[in-house]
Amino acid sequence: MTRLSGSSHSIWLDGGLVDARGPHLNVTDRGFQLGDGLYETARARRGVVIELDEHLERLRQGCAALGLNLPISDDQLVVGIAELLAAEGLDRAGSVGEPSGGPVGDAALRVTVTRGPLERRGLLPPGFEDLVATIAIQCWPYVPTADDLLERGVRAVSSSIRRDSVSPLAGVKTTSRADYVYARLEAARASADDALFLTLDGLLSEATAANLFIIAGQTLATPPLSAAILAGTTRTWLLAHAERLNLVAAEVDLRPAELLAADEAFLTSSVAGIVPLVSLDGRSIGTGRPGSRTRALRAAREDWIDAMSKAALLPGPAD
Ligand SMILES: Cc1ncc(COP(=O)(O)O)c(C=O)c1O
Image 1: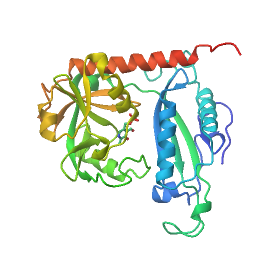
Image 2: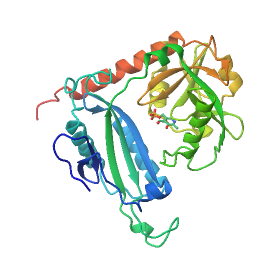
Image 3: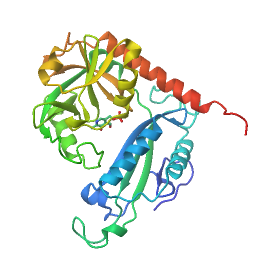
């Protein structure tokens, strides 16, 4: 493993900073061999990770679902994240220029946990219980969603891959992403931006890396957790803050016809935020243009992120 030297880019791996150019991992690592791992992607502003507790909680739930022992406390992870953001100059406003056009101090952050290295072949060979998880933290300067995409909106296709709503892993953010990559390839082949998954029952589920919402009248609707979705942190935030725009939030089964008949639709994720969705399989949603309420919700979320990061940096009461 190459330890960090000088000013080269770094990642945090198993307890310390290492040179991002690697090499890093044992080839027997089960994340590499089998996609046997989990990850979280979050946004940081001014070095403050937005909804960090929710991301760490989801990571721990995913570890429990996969029977993967995470040998590190949340506090240790938080220290690792802080070390990495500081090393990359992404820990405070004004610490970096605006190479990506993003607000200073903004970062995208990824925490990946795998079951660790194991010499033996097979899915669960003897000794798998004793494996020590590999933990990696990466960060990048935040690249805001492109203005032209926000102006024209996402065009989606429906993926030929169906989601199984009774699968125990349907809502787990594993590193096994072949289905999602395949769906993105389907979108690319159709010259679209993204793909939506349907469940085996024909219900709308989610996009390849985002949750789905529609606005119909005063209702802000999103598929329920039973539609084989990830319980997105941005989705949870929206359900709690819908009334800001006089919307009534609802988790309801949705079909493609309801999406096409909606006034507006959008996708949500921690890093990209709230992004308008304007068509499915070449058919317009609403007017086929990003809607004003989607725009307002996006602005409200961005303002909230900014306020949260400032509030977290305010000095607390003197000890
Ligand atoms: C499949 C999928 N659904 C939904 C989301 C949105 O989750 P969050 O809002 O927590 O970023 C993601 C995020 O990466 C995702 O990969």
